Length: 329
Image (tube, rainbow, N blue to C red; front, side, top):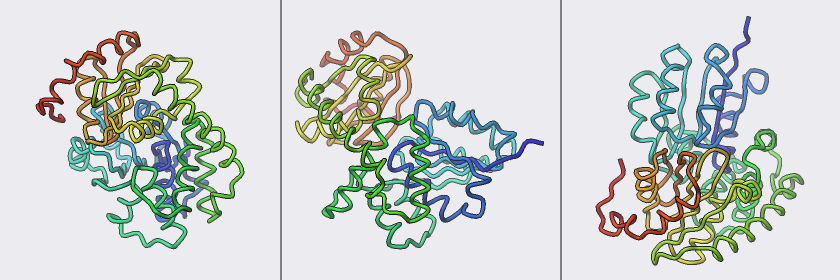
């Protein structure tokens, strides 16, 4: 007989890791760790990660901070219709299109626009936090872009965000972070976190410099491209680098990179146009996109990187945004 387990899959970032800690701590401690499996994923490979835990092996499935799109919606329908209890807790704007449809067929949905998924959980699930948990929720908010005047929170947020981002495939490290939080240990004194952070800090500085040096300036937006070898070096730091560069230049930023068999576009827009940029890019090249108005990304098919950059540098591509005609779908 196959032993079924509760499967919890979260976005492999600071927000997702802290969401996982809160979910386990408040709703699954009686089953953890023996009867719970933790997975962490990136938007483009969520279906692959979930597929590692087929229906017949799942007692339940929880998705935390994972944006829902058409493909993931269709994939989840099979789990729900097979009787697997599915819980979705998410704060991504683009998930809104699919949330009600999932709720109608039996998924438990916790969705809303919030600074972070942990903040959403606190507001929607009536979680009572202890001081340690309050700090971690604030850390998640800052990692998602909220302002903070507390030096300790800001420093810890920077450490956790960068340490995770330097290698988004290091799922064991994220699991270790969850275990440390469940034990109530101080993350700032975790040596492995500090080692990863210091390496990531150096790489981030280099990445921002390269992105700025090779940027194509279109006035209100700058574009930089990266080859596959560079993507392997800088791993998951592109989102943070785009944010840093946007703040530094005071402009919207689009970073385009070749990654395995796809092109990944990372967008940061203080003007709240990130989803607009991504929608237009996908309408031209195909693929899918998701995220928030200020921070979004798109995954495109395996196209020549130089061709993509050439098309994006054509100012006529962005005319719908300039004229205010573009709308999220």
